[in-house]
Length: 124
Length: 124
Image (cartoon, rainbow over all chains, first blue to last red; front, side, top):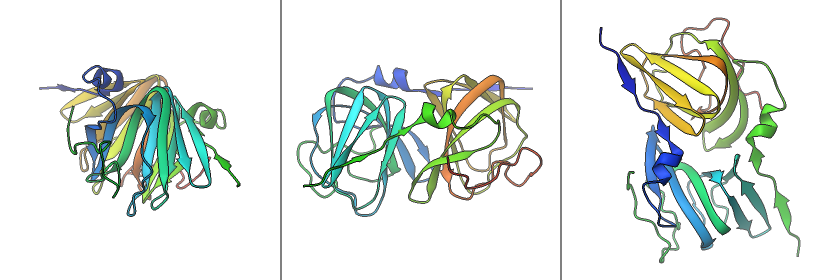
């Protein structure tokens, strides 16, 4: 009887494969959703996603997300879901390592575009 | 100008609020998907989910998932997505702390039922 050993997806291993910031790399899919890893340091732009919530899980470091009426701090071992249509601006003083979960095809900068816009569907 | 401080969701804090095993607790929602935490030790039952993939992120310990043709070991800092329709049996020698992500309304035992069936939509 054959018995295959399937491979789990190791976050630290995935982060060892790239060093650039603000670029999202797909590591897994669940139905039409994607799990993506990213390194962030500095300020992202104000944007929203009109059609979908967006989930942030912090693996290392601390992420700040500003909203028009406040902010949240998300540290390693914590998560936050930004509701659809809510303007937000992620930032990190020191590099933060993130796991993002959202539907396939979501542009990281929403409708804003610009230099922080990540290439889509890059698997690592 | 008012400025609210939003609260992140801390996994360790959520686990401090319950001790029972095999019971899934909802901690967040993203669109029609739920993030759930669970403690597992021992053997789950063979089951599948005909209509959806199911994502496992291990926060502490090690989870084993057997398939009819093999298995995967998932340690802390790792994840795995079980494709829809694939029979699987989770197990853990020592207690494992999991984050599960799947659509709202998925029964943890699939169509099998039995004593391991978790109550649905219990938030913590």
